[in-house]
Length: 394
Image (tube, rainbow, N blue to C red; front, side, top):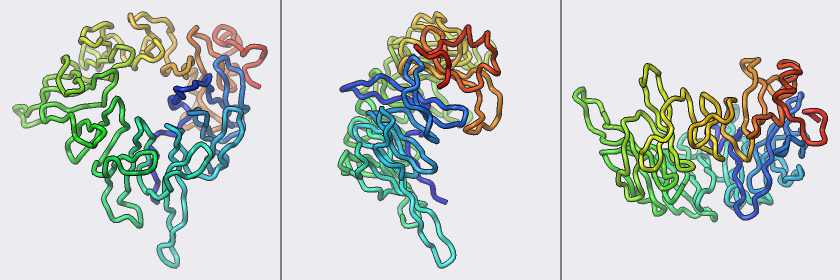
């Protein structure tokens, strides 16, 4: 049975897209003992009571919510503004959201299949770009969205190819790529057959070479790449290391590393495998290639809101551990942190224990039953109740 792919994941832990013109205070998804989901503010106060089967984070004043098997959208007051009617629903980006509809298609007198089609709606739920597509409907970024046909669809004869459309659904870059990514800083990473490189907004393969392989598009003006590609003595492709390219495709600096992350807040994560007997250790370099934070972490992530999540906890730009708790990156002032694993194969009503951590190292919300498993002393030490609320759950 054909399923349609909407590029941005529906998990409610996805990063919030912020409205640059009028940023609203962030809201954070939570769930109650029934598994129903709602939202809290940064202090842990419940602002939208858990009442939905599933929610995503807010983006541009709307959050996708599932009621039963159908997705719709609510506003920040918790009112349903677009009725649940879609099979899938992505966050809004640049005023539009990719949604999927399904319909029955009879193959013969006895057999039928479900056909999934995606398109784009506005903030009122009106289709701006009709749901006529069997393939990838990506989120808009820098005025363009990835759109492609799925060649396995019952009534599509073409192979899988992806291009980019504008807000009116007009092709700005014709479908021609096997895999694509959103535009960032004027470029997008695409795959064309066995080759991959960065295209500009005209669709031209602007940064590509047989001597390097771009690994991601630009962040803070630099793009990570595998450098010095050549055939080794055993006939396999080898490289001289990793480094960063500028927007002219020129090497800025290189490292004898085994992987790189993009730049964020002036620093990029660097991986070194086999260093000091470890499988991999991670550190951070600045824009000149200088190692600012030595590789000492078994795991690490990019800097967000002044902190990076590592195997030692959250570190600052000097590598100092400021919070010893391990968790996900901060977003909107809170970080999602696992507290205790109590099950394999979670269900909506029986999940592992997690919570939202603030930058003082205190949880402002924790999963139902946390106090039961972790104890009153743990709660007293690690949990800060919402203002004017004596209980972590309402």
